[in-house]
Image (cartoon, rainbow, N blue to C red; front, side, top):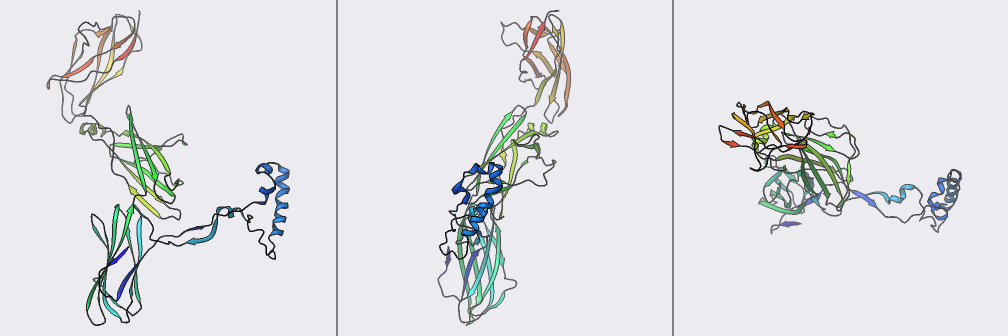
Amino acid sequence: MSTTQQGTHSLAFRVMRLCKPSFHVKPPFRLDPADLFVGEDIFDDPLAAANLPPLLSSQLTKSMDSSDLTYGNRFLLHHPSDAMGFSGLLLLPQSFGAIYLGETFCSYISINNNSNFEVRDIIIKAEIQTERQRILLLDTSKSPVESVRAGGRYDFIVEHDVKELGAHTLVCTALYNDNDGERKYLPQFFKFVVANPLSVRTKVRTVKETTYLEACIENHTKSNLYMDQVEFEPAPHWSATVLKADELHPADNSSTGGREIFKPPILIRSGGGIHNYLYQLKLASPDSAQMKVEGTNILGKLQITWRTNLGEPGRLQTQQILGTPISRKEIELQILEIPSLINLDKSFLVHLNLTNHTDRELGPFEVQLSQNSAHEEKKVMINGLQTMVLPQVEAFGSTDFHLSLIATKLGVQRISGITVSDTTEKKTYDPLPDVEIFVESD
């Protein structure tokens, strides 16, 4: 891990990673005396539950006599917690260990004077070098270390938030005066690799006016991860709601929504454990119209924070998550209301709305029923003039109007082919989807 340029130096760097210890676990082979004589369901009997534990406890106390040199009780459970295998000790790191993206790299660095002489005026620098940049962690140029005595040392701690994957190099340099007054330069390099602690797979699906985002988080580390927060930050024109199976009402996760004061962390087990999150996204008004015109399909990004077994934090932010591209829809025609009772050969009014989603004035417009086929006779037609003229519609504005129709055949019929044309731009827009109605006799 460490490399040094050739030459004789009085000083040498020693680097140790600062991280929390792990639990010292000894998987035990321990027995509960009750398991040797009775089954697991014996304590379902109230009489046995009241009398058997004291009896077994008295026998166990006798077997734990300190004068017994045969250690016959070494396989017995003295306490229920013994089955977990915790020895009560913590294990210090035995190696530099794995370093993951999103963690804080913390290192204890010691510069030792291995000579028999004092060195003076020491300028120390510590930097992290990645494939993209070089980050300064410590620089004592303005206040050099006055001296380090023979056999002494100077210690310091550096921290760095890991934001890049791949190879990293901790560069430690010292510029100092040796015993003979010679100015010497000592560089040392400590290399390590940053891995990805988790992967995030997303799936986007749109149903009518609602978009659903599924995020699957997988743990690639060798320790359990406790997810403190997995929040979706929606883009400005979206609102987000997290959906949970165990809640009757979804929790609002938009920027204006409330947040829980406390929520227990979600465990994602080591070595490939996964957890799925589901978010419901809807367009927020009034900017949704402008967003549709611009055609943007950015939904937002995920903010993920976690802790390991002993509370060491980590944090990641995903890139912008993209949804289905939104088409540029200039004009939108929709039916607001149709009479519930429609009689044969009698006119009825259909309430419609025409909306301009652009930033400019459009129109005038013509509304008519288009023919699907020259030989096909329509069962629902316009009553009166076959073309209806509408005035201009202002930018991001809308207008309501009524279209008089008449049905010429009984039963289930379709209103089809209602089409809008812009007379100024000579443009015809897609017709409305067919709508079924039921025609009765008078």
